[in-house]
Length: 360
Image (cartoon, rainbow, N blue to C red; front, side, top):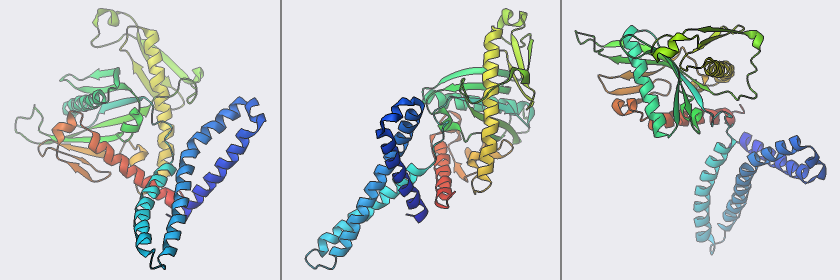
């Protein structure tokens, strides 16, 4: 294992011993905030330190086995212990490296997922509908709840823009690498000559912001307009000014919501989406700075980057960030995303490990 990682583990062990001393002090229980912080930190560090202590014990056992090699009577037993010990060492090193990776605090959050039609006109809008179905089918396989927040339907079907909320444990963890440009190559139904067209959509995945804390929305920074809803929804929804448009003046971000009959509910939903967008912008800026020093851009969330191509004539999906090509496009479009998402997560973990080993 790299010396830099061993230094980090040694420091964690020292910190755990320090926390144990602090928690044993009777005064700590008088400050409940400090007590909670210390117990949370203890819970995070203790499993890593336990692995490190196992690793140190194993190193001592390997050293003892090496010394036994000089004794002819113990040599065979020593060789067996060394063989078993080295296998155990490899396993422990992998577990320790994974345990040292920084935790993403958003991993268990619900998400907002936006799909916008881009270049390609009606075909792009139809592809947006296909992407929506793909993500909804995946969410159903995870037993997540799906809520439509906002939609703008195109004339020939599909969507100019659609926002859904996915509610379920680990939603951000699974889908956080989906942000970016999605390109489709296929023969549109309206194409009489059978020519392949290329069109694109943009996907944005944003963790839901905590209602309490992370994004403070100053009422003075908001312009809130109400208007009559358009499109489907029955007579009532079109007779009242129930639709809400919120503009965040400092950033220029605009959110519309008109899917509920209640203006109050539409406003609450729009504020929630706005908070997620602001938090997402902050998150992407931070990730872009980190990614600038690394090879991988998986986690940068760059919307302008073309991340994936769906080629229907060849039945293949290619993720350009990790050079992954899968020839099972029908299954993917039906929500079978596990293999692709696992490959993205593995690549991201490898990138974090490289940064960790370099002292990043």
